[in-house]
Length: 214
Image (tube, rainbow, N blue to C red; front, side):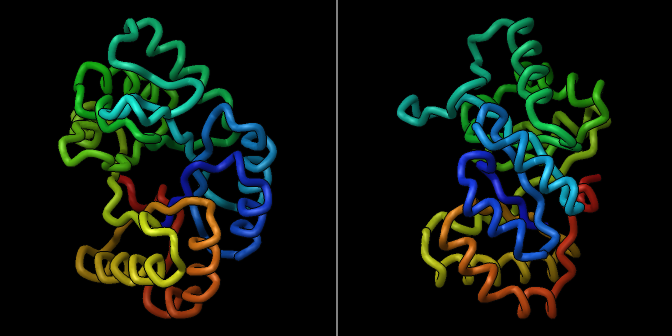
């Protein structure tokens, strides 16, 4: 599965990624201006929709943006913000974390968020922005379907590097039977998917991420 994070800001790139005709999963930032419109379009064309939940990063220089969950929030505020963020993304069937290298290491904080996912019948994909994340483990303990990111596809924003990461994702899928990669709506991702699409589709079956959570 290939998840495209940070959807909802880049109208043209979002539209062009949708137009590729690949079974990509799209994860939308709740407060982004084009989220409602693009999520509707993605849903109508059969794509999995996720909420890209903004969570506190370890480095305060990184601002996850509006609707961010912070560790010093009260449990009541965490629940209300989570509910609000979930409600802003139409047709969402799951959630993954946006940033969150600090937040996802905290079990009680993750429990509050995951409890609401369980209540709404949503699954959780751990973006693994920290190797010490407890998100997937806590979701499993709570009986929530879950999975985790194996490969970041476009940390280096060039077509060549992104194509290389896509090949690593294919290798991981062949080794483990499945793999989840995460990319972003940028030119490198679009060019890499356009260039490598036929090769990818010959090697593996690209599925909506809902097929890979357990």
